[in-house]
Image 1: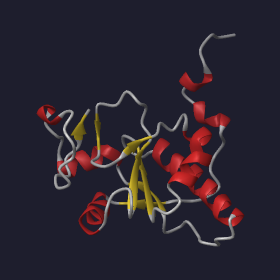
Image 2: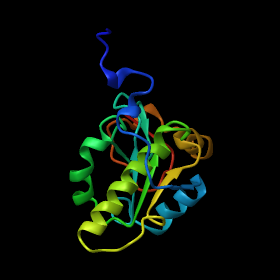
Image 3: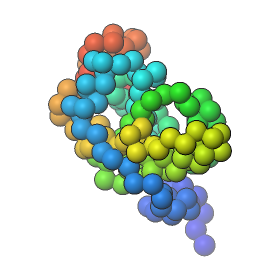
Length: 161
């Protein structure tokens, strides 16, 4: 028997199972369009599901590590119920980002059914194609001198933490 906690294992997500809802991808250009036409946190929210020891983040994103996401879904759904679109990402969105988006879509569908709002989540929940790596390739990495300063609402380069 090992002393390692299952959350640190390579396949930690097996405990939560695969999501039932298929989620569409969103390109970095489509997400950039949301920034120019909407308000983060109101019209859309970007959810970074990388571990909490990250060093940079997409502007306006919130960090909810995928390892803790299933346990936080009930509170998260009530807090973000009125947001129109949810975009999940990790480093490259090859597993963690799409899987987390699927878990969220499953929970959102269940929540909407429970409250009698029969809305489909197919146009509300996405994962970012290529993850933060694709975002940085397109918009760059913010300067370390910007650490601790509020986002200016204009620059789309990542913010250093």
